[in-house]
Length: 184
Image (cartoon, rainbow, N blue to C red; front, side):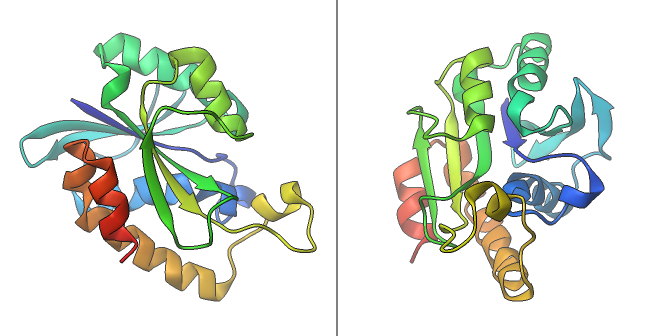
């Protein structure tokens, strides 16, 4: 059993924010793999289904970024999902826009959504860090809560398709191979 988590903020005005890239990846997963219709459950929007032979759940927490851990803890306790079978998609300021890095565990690096997950479920889960780049003349908070521009949205579609095409590597926990392949 695998749990995919997309981090973001649930309000309509946050829908196209850079901080909501995790939600966008979950939407792409749901669409590409015909997972069930999203249902409000466990303080999030939950879908489920199969990808190949693997039973999967995908969730977008409705608890806002800074409290994502409360949603995920409820869900993993209910379904008895081991934290090592969790894959979290989130934005990363320290990575160039469009680049992607996957890793297991590690520090939250100042990301409040990751800090919340660490607090509620520990650090033993996989993370897919999707680069949004660093702002030059904009405050960090304004940048991450700002919307993707038209060019970035086009690139975001490419990013989603690449992640979908290599999802089997994430499921198989081949994070280094995923990272090297997706950035070529």
